[in-house]
Image (cartoon, rainbow, N blue to C red; front, side, top):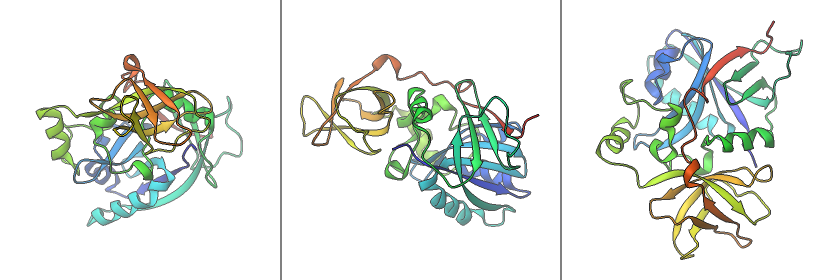
Length: 282
């Protein structure tokens, strides 16, 4: 099932500088009224959460991420805040496709996240799973959303987050920077993100589900990140360097998958980062 989403609102005089120091992305490079992807890493470099960071002003930021990670991310930000002058609040949100004209009932906190690849209307309401068509669009574009089941398991390079500009090795320190930099400069990761084409299987696989080699069903070769079924027979997974082209899901009614070797690097920073607009546009 597609994840539900929430926003962490960060308000205060030090909001921009504090979030910049915590996230792996160059948050200070985000212009007001714009958003971009950012990874939040734990000290061993693995990604706790992937989020869309919108900068309204230097004193107000929005962190849009899967709801099942929002509370843990907010708690961790609070532990590192120390003397930084900023406050955090979480609100569940509902994400839909915006109509050509914004409704008159749009609230002041509602926002439209737009880029060349997609456009989301984010409204403060009881959260619902991301609509299936929007979720399959994210999987097609190769956005590796992290949920609780896959949190703190993969380095940014394993998730191809450099293609989203979700981490920067030039911005200065951030949690996990040493491990991320060492992976970048001293060698490549032995696990990497791929797009898969599904054959068989009636139900979407949950994030974290293991993938086995079709040549040796006792060998774990990958882990599901996101499955677009039933909208599209595609999925995203992190696989090992030695994974064969054909993989099998580790379930009774096992689906099989083929790695799309030619489509694993389709994401682009400019395509999947953009503007954050008030929903009550005129």
